[in-house]
Length: 556
Image (cartoon, rainbow, N blue to C red; front, side, top):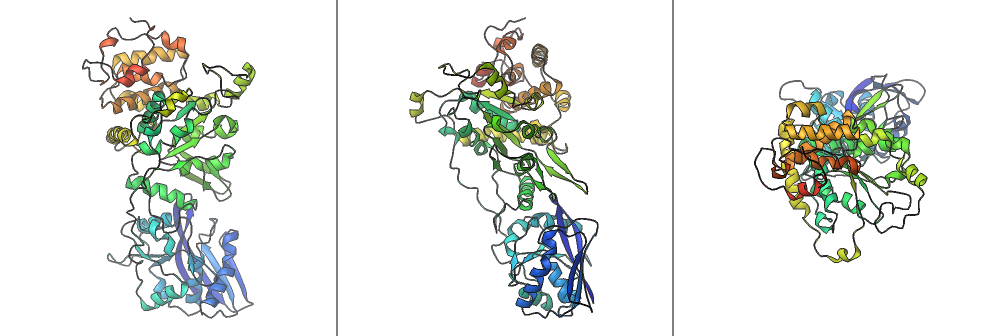
């Protein structure tokens, strides 16, 4: 007898339909699974047969053939245990096949018949809700049967009927009764408050320039590189970046949970977090660990940091070929992993924060001296960061060690809440600007030419940027990245147009030679310009005074 049960499989972070067909016929007792099953799928025959026996069902000595359609797509994971078991019961007459007509089932079976969580439940739930499986009339909805620990993530998909019995026996009892009970109260409640912040930007003493750069990076999702001696506070600053980022939107939270579910990083019954991801892998990671990969491609660190922060400490210790793998994700905001049989795309819009020492001993450029590294050693050390990758890093900041006497100060400066308020305002302006633009949420994700032609830029700002580009030999990419940073600074100032002061501050975060900066031409009336970008006169804002070009600059 033949029976069929609908299920789904995950490819990347998306799911596709799978029809599990089970045929039980006379012949030698043998289980055969076809449809390009991976090793975990082939082993399901042992789990399913033991779960059926231990749940009190009859397992006759028959030839069992399981087909996972479509047959030309490789299947992996343990989520097919439950649909295979249900199909077997229907094929042997122990369950009415009609009861399976409007359900989609996923789940791993324990040997005792209990249901265990699987990866990618959110992706399957989104697929079931969008595809409208088995809808016989306008009022009929498909029901997704899944393990209880996966209910929290699947409940993020609205208007989807769920059923999460604890065991195989309980599922069969509900199917026979014709009433699939929804999950228990509280299981699908995902409205959890954000966790209390254990760190705060106000804890940082000194490093005002670095904190300002951190604020700009948070507002526009710009890549930031901090260079300084050991103990200067690079790691401390990076770990406080999430505290000034706005909470995830509903759409962003769905994408983050889907990626972490596919990667198997969600805790059982874990609700969706409103806190942006922060990933800090060890510097010994491989290219596959950073970008993703495997025979069945899994997301790497760049995708796990989607809509969050990827912090690479000890950047100079990471192999150069691994770092160069960041070039395409930084440019495109996504990773495409190609294999012989298929290709998988993972989203990867993240804020990169790197930290490195200026030389092997870490004291190069320190006014206190003490560097014992040869010039060739320093050159080799800095060459770990290739030119094309450095061109894609929007901002570079050099940190100096904070004097020990200053560490005793009780107050470090503005709190994370105060800075986050400005970041949220700037992000709101960017959401309005890019509404309707595909896959663009922040200035760092926008095309440079789009910003150059569709947002107002003062003539003085254009002249200053062009002069800097000519003197330092900026590439077209670097030119537009400076403009993106300037646009973010203008958003933080609540300015409509990009003014010369915004460009001047953005140029201070590029690795330009000081002589090149000193030679830039400023507007004739630069000393009277305001930073609001609207032409109003007034004094320069404190951050603009700190970032403007050096006093030795010439004027027209």
